[in-house]
Length: 107
Image (cartoon, rainbow, N blue to C red; front, top):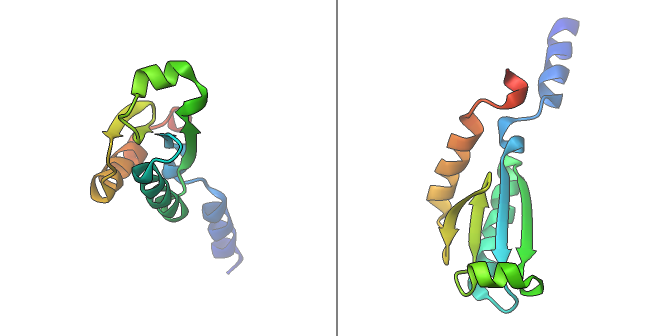
């Protein structure tokens, strides 16, 4: 019994591969689509445990010039995946694909 409990504790503490996935949401003030995307991403984060950060581009002229009115923009591990709208089903597929990629720590 002790062996199985020790294994369970080790398994429980082991970070999932989803935790290595970094999701970044670029938003603007007053953007309804941005709020919807944020809510959906926060729900997904609670379920899958990926890293999530939201950045309001209004405070950075370079980001405003780059993204303009295309917000919300969602990046997954540095690659733009969504512009203007957020797709739950596609995001879940992307998250699974990113989480299945071997990480540096697996080497």
